[in-house]
Image (tube, rainbow, N blue to C red):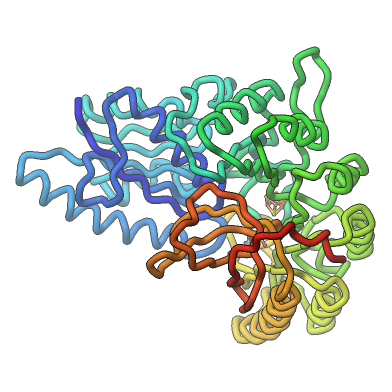
Length: 452
Ligand code: 5AD
Ligand code: SF4
């Protein structure tokens, strides 16, 4: 009965959440988590397919695992290898063909079927596949999560995407938008808080498209869900990610102004600052729509930190289009942003377009955009120096006696203090800043009022 499980997670926070749930569903079979493949009877690669080279990385990792599996077989131990996540969904049976050492391929909607797949693979000596989009929701069939996630807990409330951006695989790998019932979310949130979570991050590929069935047949919005989860008394902080501009509703903006547990932070990908490119990307919003949303958010919550994602070099992007992106970034002033070179994903509409942007042009644009973003992130962080902000401490830092936590604006904050415990929420006076993190010391007094 005593077996060990190693889950290697690639990609987004939803995969982090899913990895924890896979461990939960396998626990009754006797699988105990370990932190490396060498010590594991079962290895799951929870994969990401959003950009290129993802599947190459998975295949080379599988090559290494095959050697491990063969070495263990000589010692008389069987190692089960599973591929989960979006590469599993996209490539399916191809994975079993290309790497026969793989026993199980399981798509993101089928994790509740893992015990059955493990048994089937053991019986057949490998080769169990499940990448269907089942009618029933996996959430109804997963056990209540067993392991505590720590002071910051992730909770998936919505999956899938109906937006079909030209470049993106998510609508194909994660399926149609589906929201979990409000009551199920509330119960999970209460359990997480009972296990020590001080902060909950509500997750969804398109989280603000949340439209969950309520207990009385009504439909709940994300705004209503946020307010209700915030009412859990021992919960201190709430966040949600990732949002789409099209689904930023008036009531959601209002919650940012009115709900003190909702942190002053929003990750709102815009992808491009050119209307022509947004149209080609099928984003369903204009640059002006985005500017207005940010303006209204800042009216509701003046100190809100806005972050974004950008793609440079979408097919057809001209120098003028790229300059429009640079202008938007300068005008908005982001707290942080992630930027990527466009990568053609097989099966997406953009991959079939003929006016692909040359690689050197993409490299050059990406470097300019990243330099500007770095400058903005550094400036945003420098403005914190001298201020006192609440920090929720999540883990140990690299140095002895150092703790690492997050500010309300999701900045990493290092504090050197032996008496500080993980899970504490304490005011910290910020003393220095870089583009990626802050450093400070515990402050005795009360924190500042939010600075604009
Ligand atoms: N190429 C480059 N970046 C992509 N993203 C999604 N698909 C692609 C792609 N094909 C980026 C988007 C998205 C983030 C999670 O990944 O910016 O917001
Ligand atoms: Fe992909 Fe667009 Fe859906 Fe985001 S909104 S997951 S980028 S298709």
